[in-house]
Length: 407
Length: 141
Ligand SMILES: Cc1ncc(COP(=O)(O)O)c(C=O)c1O
Image 1 (cartoon, each protein chain N blue to C red):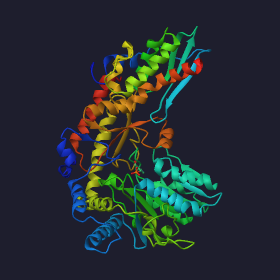
Image 2 (cartoon, rainbow over the protein chains, first blue to last red; image 1 turned 45 degrees about the vertical axis):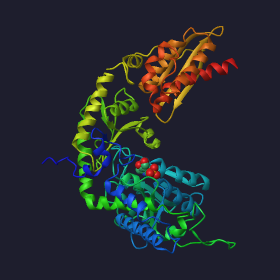
Image 3 (cartoon, rainbow over the protein chains, first blue to last red; image 1 turned 90 degrees about the vertical axis):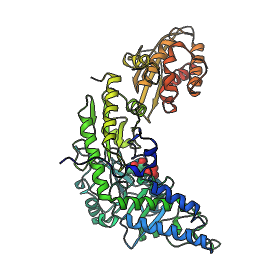
C-alpha cells in the first residue's frame, strides 16, 4: 500500500499558509514554527511575563512556575531519568561546549581518548578537539564504513583510556541514524561516558535518554519548531555536579563574597544570568505540539517523504544520492550531487523556483573530506512537508539539469 | 534560459566554455584564490611584459558564477596595462559590493549583474578578481 504523503499538520504553520508557493525543504537547518509555538510566546510575553527566581509578587511567581514547568516538560519529552537534570542553554552548540570546557577538561589526562564519528557536525567535534589538544589527549574519529554509515561493531575496541564517546543520533548530512544504545552499551562496558547530539533527530524522532542508556543529550529548540536562542543539556546529575560553569554571575551563586564562592545547586549553577523565559516556554510548547501530533506518526511521515524524494532524485540524469543504500536512512534528509554542477548553483536555481534547499558542507567538513566532495545539496523534511514539496524538488532539479545541459 | 536573473546565457556560456582556462605555464606569476566554505578553488596566472598583461590564464574548480567570472576577467584583462587591471579589479569589487546600480566596470562583466544581487554569491564572483588584484599589487609594490 502506498502511504499517503499528505501532511495533516501543514495548516498549523502560518509561514506556509502565508506563502503557499514556498516549498520549505531546509528544516534540518531550522524548522518552521506552528501557531501553537507562536501563541505560547505571545502569551508568555503579554500575560505571564516577569523575572524568574527573583521576585516575591504574583507575576514573578507565575513566570518562575512557567519556566520550571517548561523544564519538566522537556525533561519528560527527552526521556530523562529521575537522576538526570535539565539545564537550559542557548543551543546544542553551547551545551556541547559547556560539557567540553566544564566537564571534559577536568576529567581528561594526557593519553586519554575521546571518540567521535566522521558524521559529526562541527559542534560535536571542535569542542572536544580543542580540549583534547589542550590536555594532550587523543581525539579519535571513527570512520564511515562502506555503506556510508557507522555501526556498533566499530566501537568494539573501545578501551578504558576512552573517557567519552560523543555521537550524533542522526547525521545532518546523510540522514542516517546511529545505533545509539548499542554504542552506549559498549562505551559503558569500558567506563566511558556517552553524549548524544540530538540536534537533528529531535524534530521527528523519539529522543529517549533512558532507553538509550546514555549519559547526556543535547538539542536546540529551533530544529524542533521552537525559537532560536534556546537549547538544552540533559545529563546525569553526577556529571553536572562536576561540571564547572562556563559563565559566572547572577543567579548561579549562593555566596559570592566568600574566598571560594559557593555555587548554587543544579541547575541554577549552570544557568548564570537572567533566564530565557520566553525561549523555555516556547521550546516546551514545541515539545507539546510534537507530542500531540504523535512523534511516531511524525517519524513515519518524514521517513516516507525522505524515501520518496531519494528514490525520485536517484532516477534523474546525473544525480547521485549519498548513502542511498545505507540501512537506517530516511531520517528526514537527502543529500545529493549533480554531475558537473556545483551545489550552490542547484540551490540557487531551486530557490528561484520556490524550493528552499541547503547547499554547502553543512558544518561537516570531516565528512565532506571522507566522502570526497566539497559540498552537497541537502533537502530536509519535517512534519509539515508533503508530496507537493517532493514533486517541486524533483522538478526544480530537472530544471537545473536543463539549464546546465547535464548529460 | 534567460537574459535576466542570475543564470544568463552569457554567464552559462562562460561556465560551459571558459576562456583562457587550463594549466598555467612555467614562469607565470601565480596567485591562488580559495573558499573552503564552498570548495571554490582557482589559481590565476599572468605574464606581464612592460607593465602590461601579456597573457592571463586560470585553472581550478568552482560553481558556475566563480568559473564564469574568472573567464570574463581573463578576457577583460588580457592586453591591459597592469595598473588599469588593478583599477578594474577595484571597480568590480565595489560594483559587486553595491549589489545594484553604478556603472558597469567593463562590458565583458555585465552578465554578472544578476549574480551580484545575491550577497551569498559575492565571494564566488570576486574570488578570481581578488587573486589577480593581490598578484598585481604585490608585484607593483
Ligand atoms: C547534528 C547537529 N548538531 C549540532 C548542531 C548545532 O545546532 P545549533 O546551531 O542550534 O547549536 C546542528 C545544527 O546544524 C546539527 O545539525
